[in-house]
Length: 140
Image 1: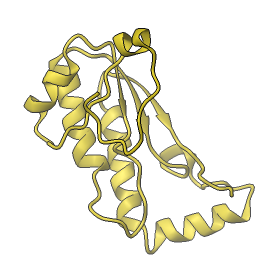
Image 2 (image 1 turned 45 degrees about the vertical axis):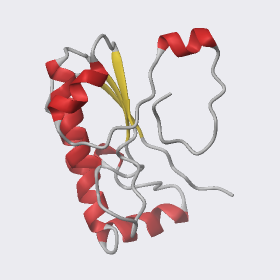
Image 3 (image 1 turned 180 degrees about the horizontal axis):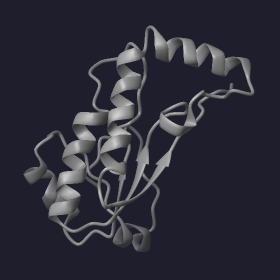
Image 4 (image 1 turned 90 degrees about the vertical axis):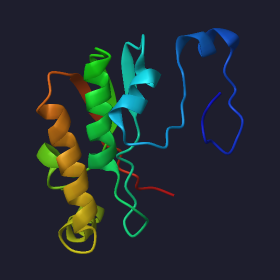
């Protein structure tokens, strides 16, 4: 497996024939394309945003992913985003935590919110078949 996970994977030999996990350290669509050859779908977790942690990569990374997908004619994508982005606004309107999250998105985490919004707009503006996964992340 060519990934950056800290723990070992427990996939059967049959599972390993069905998908590839790759750690890619490039935003260059040409370099990404080789990972998408013969793929039927891509799962992108570049939208995993944690406020106050590092460089925002959702837009920049997924922009390269979309270009590479088009180059290799991969039509489907599952994309990690966040609760409260685009048509999911306001976040968790039924729970107090949603008010806190909305406050963060409008203040301290404004850049991550913009990054995620721009990321979703890339897919919406493409001809790709996509699914946004918007995890809530609230719990113990």
